Length: 259
Image (cartoon, rainbow, N blue to C red; front, side):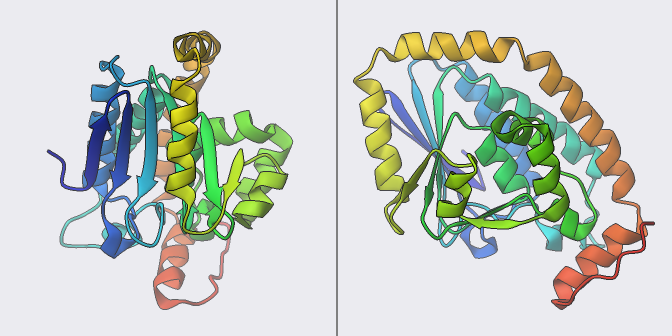
């Protein structure tokens, strides 16, 4: 059904696997579109009460696909991509399921935005989490500003976005970015056990509370993703962004000029 995702349902639990392991599950325009469509389909599926999101291979997701951004033969349509990301963020936030992010390896940039959009975050001890858009002269997208602020508050969110600091699972838990830490290699097992416990709880009441709490914030999230789209589209044309992605590809420290 999907080229870049695998969706499996077993009873009241669904598992969504990001499935571009050869690219560390970095998100190209196909994956972004498919994620939006997948979440929209799950929004209509009341038979599923828990959704686990994980990555195939060595990582959860390394973020946006920088190689795709540099592909001159198939230009990256930033306006179209930002529409997908808006749909993705708003639908993820309003899903009628308890969402669990199961993080191993890297969850960076856009991948981390999506992790932060989940209700429960379980990360392996030595996973690597970073809101590191700043390294390529961009801002968080996929609702990253909203989700990070909801987790840690505005002052701390600004520090994390501006520094692009990398955290292990253990370090992330200490500052409230992660709810639970699992031993390396046992992230999905831990997430699945957590899901089973949820199903033994009055989960319909839990989902109702989630819907009430999130309903008060939906307009704010919509405003955030709109502003992210405008700013990101402009920043994609800056000299700092071009320098950032060139430096990333060339594995050197970028020289930013604020332009």
